[in-house]
Image (cartoon, rainbow, N blue to C red):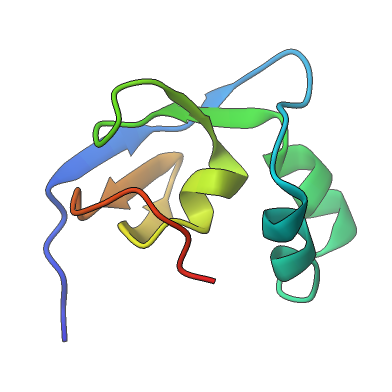
Length: 84
């Protein structure tokens, strides 16, 4: 099943790490290295589904997330919920 990207959103850098739910970071610890995880905590996207700033890790764990390529997130735009 190939999902079409409804939105392409640019990943932006924040000065400080953004707050992410503990369950999201715990779920991603095995899949992503420690250094990359700490770098991703400082990134965010303007979510087109809910219309506000969302930490990238939360976006990465979202059901609508398709892929990230060259600083852009491809989003299905269906719903904003955890897929873990």
